[in-house]
Length: 251
Image: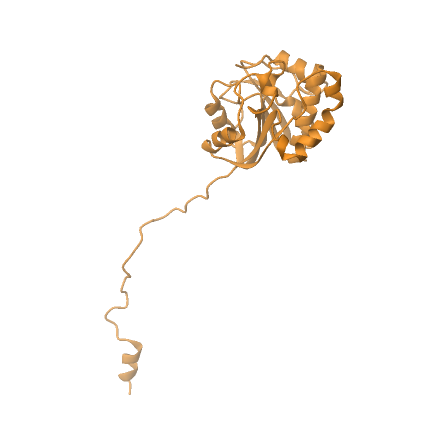
């Protein structure tokens, strides 16, 4: 079940809790990808709140928003780069994308396998993608007051297994967003401390969302030509005298 684009916009841009979640997740993404100079960066689902840092240097930035969700213009005050698309048929050429961000696109889809196939198709060889999904072990997936309470939450092993089935190679996987999904002042004031503790103490490895950075690795092409293995050597010199025999004949 896709969320409505207006609800997503209101959460990420107009609520203190949504702005806090946006900052944590975006900082993690920028930590993985500090730059994208000369590259094409695409986001699918509602990934645009995370993509602003790439606008300055990337060759192209594209926000893909699925039809059941709806689309909004983005970025504000600049030329629009967001596109309404079919969930499993994106208006991008094969191998066009260098970096892909998927947020609120996989867990809410009725066709996750087809979405992953489309992710694979549009990524170029060696391209990278980040999938961000609700963590089944975290508290954000247990409340419907945020977008992470909708759709199918994942465990880390479930997410990695699904990505592996679709030929992605996991480079890094971890959880983040350790602050509780609460608007109470005490939690808002301690949010930064909780995020820091969660990153450094393994016992708190149950953040609200899971990150999986993957790459698209292509097998080396096979060389054209015959693949027949000749097991018996061809005796091209058979019948000719050996060098030693020739020397004996010229005394």
